[in-house]
Length: 115
Length: 110
Image 1 (cartoon, rainbow over the protein chains, first blue to last red):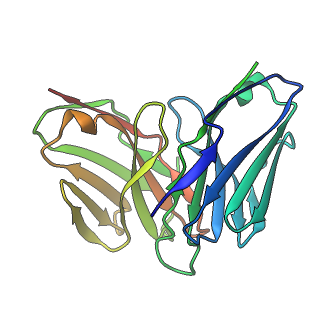
Image 2 (spheres, rainbow over the protein chains, first blue to last red; image 1 turned 90 degrees about the vertical axis):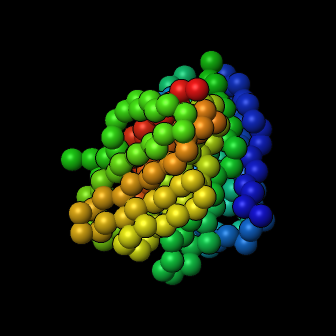
């Protein structure tokens, strides 16, 4: 089973709203990732959690706040977003073993629209 | 120079033909190489990964890796209209971060 689930599928929010995106995997993977993807562009890495610790934050604005409650769950808390933050937000997970291909599997994504 | 470059496309091939997608990378310490397929509005779906020089075949798909030339390719044999999608080359670099190319849009014409 290589399934990563994300909720919600679609989200529309105003610039003053607070919302959260959720991601879950049950593959026993120890790394989880948030990516942002704009139309006709490749995914851009935002955050990496490795063994439930934030290991990479790619200079993402503080209006995006990640959280990893346990090894299976990853949240992205959103606050005071801008219209340019509208994008497809992708969650991925990988085994994060030392060596090996460390293949990342993506969830279906959340389509976010900021009004 | 971009870290991962793909032939820009778009690429159109007739049904039944071979589609050839190419990718070069700059980090010589790169360890693993991936091809993802992404349909419009959907998330990337893993097609293949390769980490040893040479060819790796899976059904109609063949990935080829040449580390000396820093080149990886994907061949799709007997292309079908359902193969029409954007193909993303991704490279796991020495920092163990995945870097994506800009993608090649493939259209298979019936």
